[in-house]
Image (cartoon, rainbow, N blue to C red; front, side, top):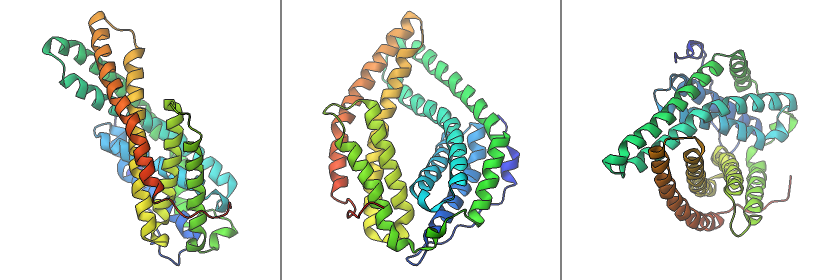
Length: 306
């Protein structure tokens, strides 16, 4: 898939350098500018489909921006926020379709490496099916990134990076409001963990992961105005997010291996791979709560609900 050449013509934004005296508006402007610049840098490579890392970084850029805008929604124009988050979600889904196959390919290739030569033919066939699915997802992504909706989104982000569509509260100092933003995101995460059953389903843990990610992204962008405690919290949340992400990836890989009709040999090898993934999945389920307990040790001070 050819790169969307129009992206190369877009001028990168200039983020505000955040400091303790910065306003909430400065934080929002930086979130928009950083996200846009990441998308401009890695989007063309993601569209070409040649480098999985470009896909990953583009997806992170869209999801991080979408999450941060949600966190600061009290200070952003409602219509602009709704339209922008909708378009970012649409683009993130396209990037996610490619990224998900990249992750599954990595896991399945790792499983295949431990198989006998006799089973290698069937394993290669399974990998080929997933590679074909990835190519289709890359084609779809390329179409999306050439679509007028993507152009409109980038144009809106460009304007927002210069003159963010903020409300009067955005003029207040970020240092004064940052603890409330972070503690609000933390409370939502804490409640989602507390609500888990003794043996949570993967969908339940995926919801916790979304909460952890939102809290992490909120904390990361506010770190320059909050200091060292925010850095420690962001690291702990990144570790938690990673562990929960591995659980989700293992679950998704097992689901794909079980889903498609296959030959007898391919079904046999797919079953062997499912067994390996199930073992890995069980170990991951044992470890994530230990990581959560570590995160609790650096949890933010609680502030009243905003």
